[in-house]
Amino acid sequence: MMSALSKSPVFEGSLSEAPRSNSPRSNGIDVVTFGCRLNTYESEVMRREAETAGLGALDGGAVIFNTCAVTGEAVRQARQAIRKARRDNPQARIIVTGCAAQTEPEKFAAMDEVDLVLGNEEKLKANAYRALPDFGVNDTEKARVNDIFSVRETAGHMVEAIEGRARAFVQVQNGCDHRCTFCIIPYGRGNSRSVPMGAVVEQVKRLAGNGYAEIVLTGVDMTSFGADLPGAPKLGKLVKTILRQVPDVKRLRLSSIDSIEADDDLLDAIATEPRLMPHLHLSLQSGDDMILKRMKRRHLRDQSIRFCEDVRKLRPAIVFGADIIAGFPTETDDMFENSIDIVAECGLTHLHVFPFSPREGTPAARMPQLRREVVKQRAARLRAAGEAAYRRHLSSLPGTRQSILIEHDGLGRTEGFTLAALGAGSPGEIVEATITGHDGARLIAAPLAACAA
Image 1 (spheres, rainbow, N blue to C red):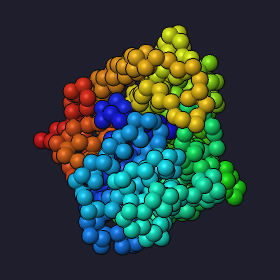
Image 2: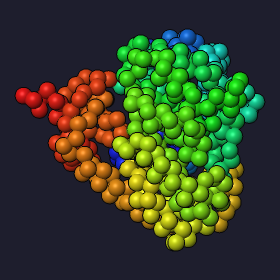
Image 3: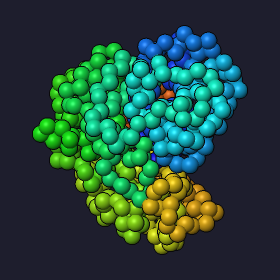
């Protein structure tokens, strides 16, 4: 999993975004979330557990940071936000958790602004928040971080809502068994473990019953779902079961998937289930075979291209997003051009690009590094290719009818996850509209009722 810190619609994907507050000063607790959709879901569980532990009753309240470790920039932003929070809230207790806290607990414990550091397992338990120490403790007493690889199961934590969100996220899986050479996330999340299928279905039922029209399934390596469960059900079976047993779900969306693990049931669901959204965000990472091998990825360039071609035949309206790293160690100009070319060859629309960020403890950090200016230049070129592809996509949609889920301020997302300005509708409402144009960043849409008038 990667980190996207841009708010541009081109880079909107399954991964990390700018920090956001899930529940600003809700009962004296502010949860600030960095990173992926899984973190967003877990922040809702954290808020509930912190309330149960009584943190809201503390003088000055509490600020909890749910961090991301995927890039050095994500960690830097978290530390910067923590310092600002202390200046703005001198009496608040500050708790740091998430992937960066799991992988670098000593760095956060050494910060004078921080009162408690919790690991990714501990952050979901009320008792961990009750252990908040008195002011002035040493760094060792501050940190309560377990060996994440000792965690064997992922519980199906139930939530009633996702604060400030028009769509709801449901965790189906956590951790990763693969060891891509650039990725620190397995050390923050542990090995792959699945939420039992019944618990996932029950959570979806609860959120759909509470009025969420769109549910997003999320995980660290979601296409590995089920390998550790009895009978080893795959992601496709989970998707079909949800759609069959929860008829109230109007839209079901998948976050990032690894195309090489897409199973037959998943492909069949994409082809036949209109409630499964025609949008897939792919973990490609590179368009060059040698770099893919050095990344220790499990797919090759041609397999990615063939997957997109095959899925487009099954669902012609499908929209693809992808993660691509620019400037991986040893990447030559020709290798980079293969990543540029794969944008068009796969027909990518929502491109998520970031410059390679060496993470201490990963094999890629020990490989021969490119000059930073080269890395940044390549990232800029990839983003430009993504922006051009996105504009072509926008230009293909005027005159079409789209179902738009309203998020806020008259903005929403089509079924293909394209941003649209509607100027009407309430958050969480699905509005049928005609696309009248675009402004280069979003579609311009008119509700069908207004068109008829």
